Image (cartoon, rainbow, N blue to C red; front, side):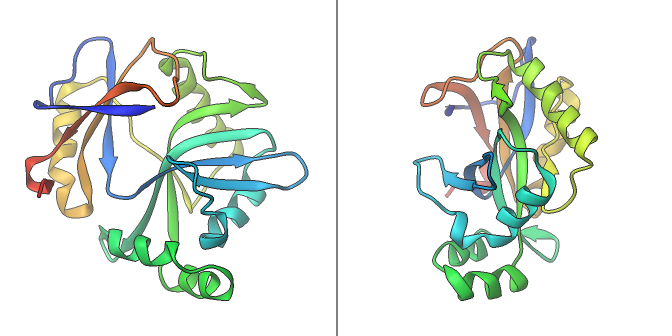
Length: 195
């Protein structure tokens, strides 16, 4: 799913809001037989650059799982996009060293596959299934469940997280299916993060 910019951070009825993180949009897939694929929104295979994500996916996620999310690197108490960029250019032994220095985290915000393709489900149902996956499997770092709310006051409060690396808000219609390559989600970018 692609996002369309909006000029105000108003959460409309029938929608949910999520923080928009300063990282790389990524899809994580775990296949039967132990294959893991971490790829960018444009389809670039990033798996070799983030071995800790691959290892955690094998250890914590069931086969036939696909999750949409944001790949981020924390440095002290803020997201460090520049560290994430540096990580992408390091395969092999350099990737393992970088994983120790600047470990990546995967902030999960949508479920696209769980045994079967769930992209036809409405967002509210996919979100409930994603929360269930986290609870059932006891997912821990490097996996993080992205917050989601239908409360406009809470969504606006998240805009104050800019110092930690929240760029703004992403809005999703509760009844909407997941449609890859289509501009359907709406995105509000905090003015303090625009350059």
